[in-house]
Length: 154
Ligand SMILES: [Fe+2]
Image 1 (cartoon, rainbow, N blue to C red):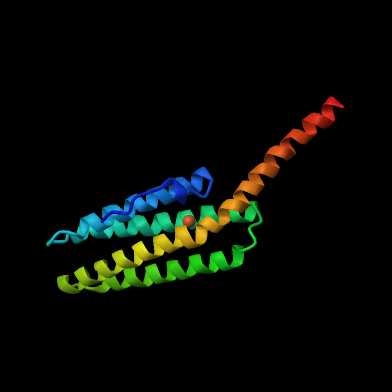
Image 2: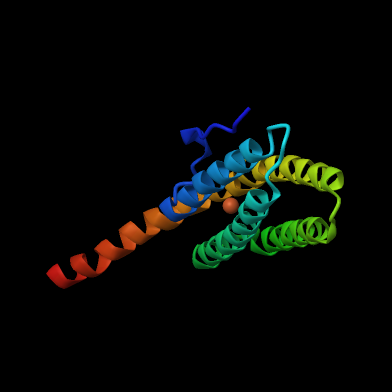
């Protein structure tokens, strides 16, 4: 069953939320591509590489946001990102080396379940913890931007 996006999953920063929606769509497309009896491995390989690159870019954007808002769990979050990239890299490398169709099918199914579990954990258990910090940062920014105006009037 495809993953469905819900507004409750928004962290409150449009760039990051749109990345997450995009990741959900990419994982849904990937699952769709491997759901039939005959897997088109050329198409699947393209989707996998696209997903890998997008995930890396997303992590960079997310880490930049965390530095900006001085997120207190930045270090452990970055470590979790690195672990995911390492795991994804090793699955993809293994997939690239396999020639036998049956084993390739098995590895893409394993990858699909890894991606689904990871995405859900990544967004729901990990990224949503950023929401109150993003809100606080934006609130302070709004207040801060008003201060000079008040000072000037005085
Ligand atoms: Fe994220």
